[in-house]
Image (cartoon, rainbow, N blue to C red; front, side, top):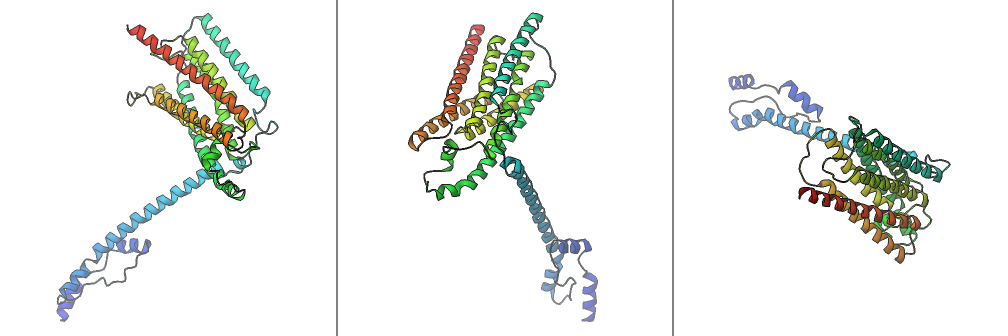
Length: 363
């Protein structure tokens, strides 16, 4: 028996040190026996002989579980930081649209910036016509401008989405306290209550959207300098006039959203920024010389979807205004409807004229 025991001790052995260290590091304790016993108990010996393999599997699973927990924790911290920066920052919560406190918030600045932009565009067009230059190379500037606008649009979209969720969470109790069971988040998104003031998270990102529209005015200048895109048969003057009027209307509309706390502006900001992110991302992709992934007209489909969603928002606003005692900022909403109709009509005329030019050139 002694010989059998000594032979078993020689065959047996403790677990490798690195296995025991990793098991203890992830909370595992190897209290089972780690040495082999005599040959007479063969079934028990085989069970104990498999302990190193079982411990290795346990350590591996524990390591995978710990790494996944660390990844989840890191993602949670990142989302928490992003949520704080985009919706819980004190400057966002305490924002207030006021000519005395906010930059570029006066009527005089609005009219001055629009008139200046129009005059500079006309002057640039006349200068290029006199010089006989149809196209001037600007290198990577248009592509960088598209990248900047795409990033700004994504940031405004994310901030508006998170701020909307936070505002609905904070004011939901007020709806129940005032016994308004008919008010739902969709109702609030389409129809601000009468007396809504332009302050808080939503209007901070509406202000950011207004500033992005001011930056977007430079796109018309870049278009005039670089020239029209290939495949477009319309004169540069027609396309430039369309862009100039469209950008001017968009700046006026975003200013009125803030000035009169217009209803449905949250949905319009989400729709507009999502469309801008796709359009400017596509322009950056092609501007740096990369080929299109496919011939699928993604931009055209997105424009059509946003247009129909905008029309649905207008219908929802007028229905809620008539049925539930009024919505805030209806004067600005009327101007928004007129400007959207003008832009839609100009888009239709532009693309129909372009398609007619294509057919005549092919024939």
